[in-house]
Every structure is written in structure tokens, then in C-alpha cells.
Length: 488
Ligand code: NAD
Image 1 (tube, rainbow, N blue to C red):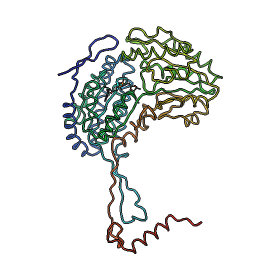
Image 2 (cartoon, rainbow, N blue to C red):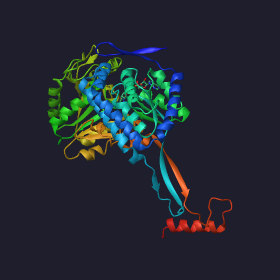
Image 3 (spheres, helix red, strand yellow):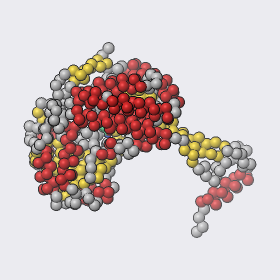
Image 4 (cartoon, protein in one colour):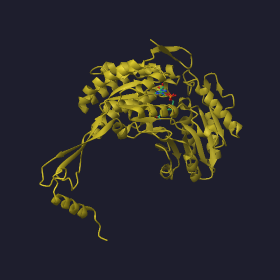
């Protein structure tokens, strides 16, 4: 059996050794999940609610174990890992509670032409949903698909990132402790090839979270089999700071927005567009705060190492390119990438067409560019191939500015907050992907609509027959004229 190791990025310690699940084994896991899904989908919403609540409760009791494992496998601080797990638990609970309301059958009006029929829309689970996850939030991010797919009545086969298999396997073990029967939620560990096998299996839907580059391959593989897919990809999130913003708060939150989790957040701040009237104050405030934060693995460190070492090269190349093209360091210098860590970097006056402004950096770096007004800020914020999240800081114009942004999620006078609210959808547009997790939209995403129309009573007029009479034709014309013809 082929295996791979998961390493602690801070210490090099081996966290665990895991099988590279083969194509044959993936197909077997999906086949077993298919059998389980028949039973799982037959349970009432109420029964699934009780089981999912049991899982949420077990994870709550074991939150410290989860956080410690995430800390070891990603290098992030224990408190961040705890927050991430708490948010994942909240989503399990929300999905379970609201599934009956969102996914219950709906009666629809049948219209005058078809008045003798009743019309209903039912929501049907896909059977098995394949979830492919990234490493940056190894419990929170995939849970946005897992919990919602399970609550909607699907079985799930989950392929965690090869950088965080231990937390994936631990999740499966906790599920097994409360599961009513086997194979409702299965984890298949492995590298990209295991992910490929899942996209080529007979799952009913794929929910992928990861880079845009991989998302395009996943979408292409799914297209071959007509498998529907949700794609949650990268971002280049802008922060827009207007002249009436609470600058102290905007600077404090934006620093965390950019640097927490070592900048490895799909919805992390990467670009700031600040109004010229407050640019100096904002810059001074954020620089002062940034100089106090430090990366490390020990208690009290603000963020950890880069979880995926190959990203260090990308981060360095973005910093070097920005500086070569006229960007100036406000915090950090060209030696910021050292060992497995990246020291905080804040740059200003970076050209809009440099890598640091157009590609996802995924490190604790931030660019601050000054704008003449918020129209210019909106234009620059939208001038990107990505469209995941954004933040707007303004006391009076937040909603107006937010309405002009091409992205899936905007927070006004806060950051990241939408991710923790069960009721709202999470996802992006453009290169940031399509489809949604979280909220009612996330539950609907893991079902398809089935229309059921039933004859309530027979009428003498038959339209759907070769024996249709001239009288029936005339009646249709008469009715359609009554309904839709306007007097001139
Ligand atoms: P990645 O694309 O390298 O890998 C993601 C997953 O896909 C991994 O499990 C990997 O093994 C698997 N995979 C790789 N090749 C595959 C293939 N050909 N077919 C099927 N599966 C394949 O991404 P990553 O480095 O793990 O994650 C970081 C990226 O994820 C960043 O771009 C980040 O912005 C994005 N992300 C997005 C969200 C969101 O909700 N939009 C959340 C977290 C992370």
C-alpha cells in the first residue's frame, strides 16, 4: 500500500502516515456510501437533526483535541484552531436545524391553464457528494460542504488535503462514534491522484475547495461525466477605506484580516484602497500595530509558519516583483521570507499590474494604495480576475459602496464575519468559483429540484392527447387572449 506522511510545518515532526487511497478503493468507498445514502436519505429531517446535533456536541466536548491536532498539522496558533473548530460546529448545527425549513416540499400555483393540476417542488439529495478540501482551514472549510450535504440527506466521501489528512481522519472517527450505521461519512486520504479518482467516480456531486488552477481541472473532469460541481476557489480580496471610516478600528481589523493564519485565507485581505484624506492616518496606525505582531509556533505567537512550504517561493516572488516595480516597504523588508516563516510585510504604491496586485499571494503581506475617491477604489477593487470577498470601511456609505463590488461576500465595518453566520451563503464569482456553501443556498446546493404535478380532477377538455378537439384549441386561444393580450 502506498502511503504518505503529514508533517508539522513548524517542527518537521511526522504527525502521521496515511494511505494514498487508490482509484479502486475510492470507487469502493463511493459504492458503500451509495448504499448508506439510500438509508440516510430515508430518515426524517428530525432524525438526521438529532444525529448531526450529537456530532456537534461531541466535537464541542473534544474541541481541544481538534485544535491541538490542527495546530500540529498546520502550524497555526491553538486559539485560531479553536475558533475555526467552533465555527465548523456552528455550521453543523445551523444546517441540521434549517434543513427541514429550506428543503421541505413546496406547493406552487399551477396557473389558470392547468387549474385542475396540483404542482409541487421536492428537493432530492444527490446520493453521494464527494468533498475535496484544502489545508488552510482543514475543519471549517470542508465542513461548509460536509454538514450541509449530510443535512440534506446525502452520504459524503471526503478527500482532505494531503497537508492535513490527520484532522480529516479524526473527523471521520468522531462521526463513527455517533453514526447510526456505517458509510454515511467516509474519509479517503491521498494526494491529487485520490482527488482525481473521486471526480471520476460515480458521486452525484462534487464540492471542491482549493486553488483556481485545480478547480479548472476538477470542473473539466466533472464535465466528462456531467457531474455537477461547486467550486470554492481563491481570492484577491480588497479592503476599501473611505474618508469617514473609523480609522483606528479599520486599521486594527484589516491587519488581522491580512495576517491571521499567516495570510493563508481565501478571504484574507490582500489589497487596501484608502481615501487620500485618511491615507496617512490609516497607514501610520496599521504600521504601528503591525510592528508588534510576530510569527512563531510557541504560545503567544500571532500566526504560524507557511503550512505548504512551496508557497514561500510565491510569496517572495510577489514581494520582489512589487518592490522592483516601485513598491515601498512600510513594514518588513526583502528578507521577510526566512526559514518556514514570513515576517509581516506591508507595501505601498505598488503598481496595479504587478503580481502582488493580480495573483493570490496567500501570505502575511498587504499592499496599501491611495485613491482619490471611492469610485476609483471600486474600479480598482473590481479590476481583478477574482471575486470572492471584500471589506468596506465607511460610516455613511458602506452599503452603497458594497453594492458596486463584483464579489460573493462583503463585510461593512468588519472582516471575515460572514463566514461565521450560518444563515448566509459563502462563495464567489469569476475565478473565485461558482455555487455556494452555507445558508439556505448551501442546503439547496446539495439537492436537486424534482417537480411533481398531479391531476386533482378531470375536466372535459383534454390538451395532451392526439384526440384533441377543435373546441379545445379554441379554448386555449381564448384563455391565452384573456390572460396576456393587452388592449392597445
Ligand atoms: P489545491 O488546489 O492545491 O488542492 C485542493 C485539494 O484538491 C487538495 O485536497 C488536493 O489534493 C486536491 N487536488 C489536487 N489536484 C486535484 C485534481 N486534479 N483533481 C481533484 N483533486 C485535486 O489547493 P490548496 O493549496 O489545498 O488550498 C489553497 C487554495 O484554496 C487557495 O487558493 C485558497 O484561496 C483556496 N481556498 C478557497 C476557499 C473558499 O471557500 N473559496 C476556502 C479555503 C481555501
